[in-house]
Image 1 (cartoon, rainbow, N blue to C red):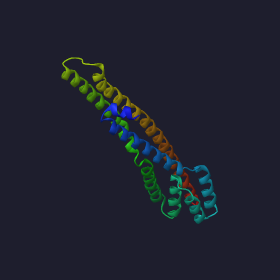
Image 2: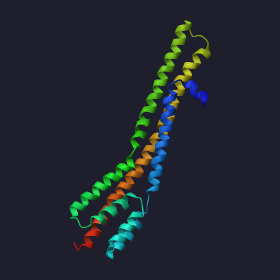
Image 3: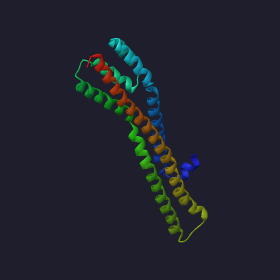
Image 4: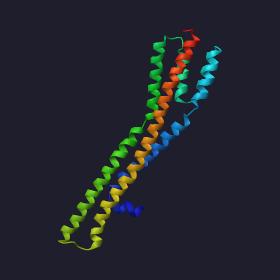
Length: 204
């Protein structure tokens, strides 16, 4: 590995940094999403049961047992259940936007890495070719294969390294984004259910 880094030239340093950064961000985001997951069906069933019995405090406590995005919506909706329906809907939308922001935090880093890594690989390719031609020019001819192999190796290794970093990063970005999209759809669905349950509680 160290030999590959050396042969790849100076461009390998930012590529190595990009790979470490992408892995760190992906693991952190996946851990956050894992720690905030919940079976929203069971959660809503418990909350609706408590609301049907007029136990608002118990419903809030049920929601606060979870760190999930749906639980945050439920807790807010119940806390402000005395507000008009449209005002309550806007409050839920605001909480929903905050939760989406939390889920998408630092996700742009993966997008940047996926974009930059191939470009860094291309830069390494160009510098490797330049190095090869410099050797040819200095020797006024093709020279020995060993002299030329350094520049060619730099060109090929950085191209491969850029793709090796970019391809898994794109996969992780799309995977995490799909999880977030499902969470957002779930939040929208449960938000509507909560509004209906609160309207029934108030006799609307």
